[in-house]
Image 1: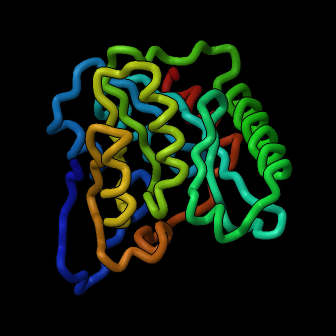
Image 2: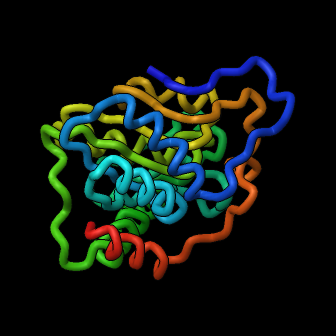
Length: 224
């Protein structure tokens, strides 16, 4: 199920002022769902400022779910898959056929990115235990959804932990990616779902890079 403002044509480009604005408008949609015992897990780095606002509005704990893209050395800009710190890798078979990565090289890339995901989880979370997922309404937040590869990896790993419900929430998403993720979550909630999506950054007036130090400050400030 996808919940959004569906439009046939975008006559005037609607944009968010910044990620905080995106988080506030997204939280309005999520409040209407009346989630019970929610927990907000963000995709760092850009999803953390959005998720921080959402968690505050929902009165929910805030944490991260780290995903790393898997690439081939011959095509470093093309993500053939994604992997979390613990879950099985998600591979895009169509892209895999296009780039023909060497199986051993692909396996090495998967393990390298899984190790980096684990390092980032430790850096962001520190000594805090991971939040309980089983039996809770889990909301996975990012600042936008383009291809959905990273979101699919995160959602698939979380689904194995037995949440009561699993929601992907983003301020803006491409229609194709939102529709494609229906098999790994209960709903996709977004504020804008423009048919001419192009890129996440185009839908924000201010879209600065978010560094690790900012992520750590936001998580600490939220009492994650």
